[in-house]
Amino acid sequence: MSRTSELGTAPVHTLLFKYALPAIIAMTATSLYNIVDSIYIGHGCGALALGALTVAKPFMDICAAFGSLVGVGASSLLAIYLGEKDYDRANRVLGNVIVLNIILSAIVMVIGLVWLDPILMAFGASEDTLLYAHEYMEIILYGNILTHIYFGLNAMLRSAGHPRFSMTATIVAVVVNIILDPIFIFGLDMGVRGAALATVISQAIAVTWQFTKFMDKNELVRFHRGIWKLNRHITLRALAIGMSPFLYNIAHCLVVIIINNQLKNFGGDMAIASYGVINRLTFVFAMIVMGLNQGMQPITGYNYGAKKYDRVLKSFYLTCIYATGVMGVVFFLGECFPKTVTKMFTHDPVLIDQTIRPMRIICSTMLIIGFQMVTGNLFTSIGKAGKAIFLSLTRQVIYLIPLALLLPMVFETPLDGVWWAIPVSDTLSAITAIIILLTARIKVPQTKS
Image 1 (cartoon, rainbow, N blue to C red):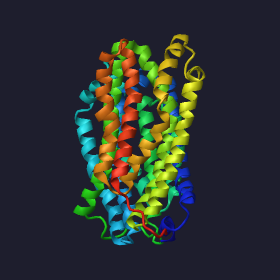
Image 2 (cartoon, helix red, strand yellow):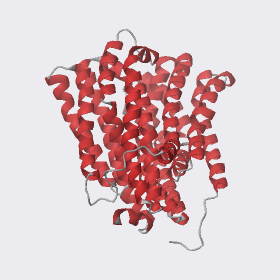
Image 3 (cartoon, rainbow, N blue to C red):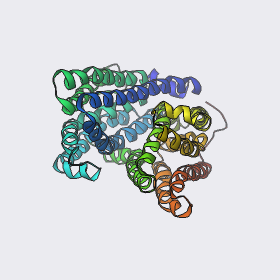
Image 4 (cartoon, rainbow, N blue to C red):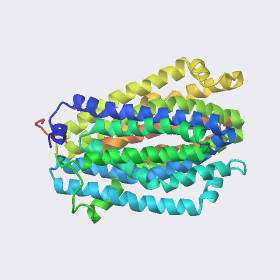
């Protein structure tokens, strides 16, 4: 109980550091794994297998989106109930997370396995890459239940006052995966199946680690009889809150497809490669902001439930400042050293030359990206599902997709229209976030807690 009660009493800046740092480390470890996994597959299975992994990634992201639908929504709800001192419902949230993840992941698994090849073809698989993509995704789908439970329990650990334990679970999965990859790919000659199997086994070990914490009888939130029956109120509210990150992930996949097609139409493969370089730069720092958001979530959720609105706003303001500083680094690198940054990823002089200008265009609005991301997370954290969903869709669906399709017809050089669609949508999204925030009317009590 002391671990959760500190969310309402300890200094906010101390809590944010305590909860965000493990999340940032975990996100960085995950980024490292993705890079290493690609290197192993590229060297051990060949270029076609690496291309197949690229094709499979959007499908994996969609599967993960269903996991976030449950995990993020339930973890926000858990923090709110803990703030309200409603420990019975808090425990029921834990049981409902497991049951919901099993149901949803089983549905996704069955649909994915039945229509696996048509889905992969729709995402860009060719006759040459389809076999590799099929072999990889087949095993990933069989392990989909473990994936959902792993991500769901990690989110619950943070809200239950165990950010370091959550971080450790992620690092355990990453380390085990990196160790098993070369054994299965090279030692046992299993190819892409070995890479997928390593992922599933590493997540199974991490889930076992997570279970040890929730089976501890000394824990306030833990597994016990009576929490497994689905509760209509908890289920619907968790799904409503989790709908924001779910739709964000789905929209992101759709945006990637549309942007890539527009870049290919007006700039060819080199334009897509440039976009890939810029994305790699922004992705690393966006992951840090996501770590800050994960650290902020249990603090704002708990204090909102406890009606300590001044602490809610303070955690939001501090996270905005840190997030702006992080994305400010992207702005500085992209505007001042675009050539140096590009050389980190390629030695191709043509690609380097064609990346400098679009990098400056896209990075021009990086200073406001952090604020927009944190604002969306604020409403997710306090259970304001409608506002969170709206903000998650503004940048990608409401603004970016129409602008990416329309601006090329306005600009003299159509490719410029695609590049400028990104910062323009960022600006409009930030303005929208400000308007929503000002009209939200989050109360600030006269006496601070």
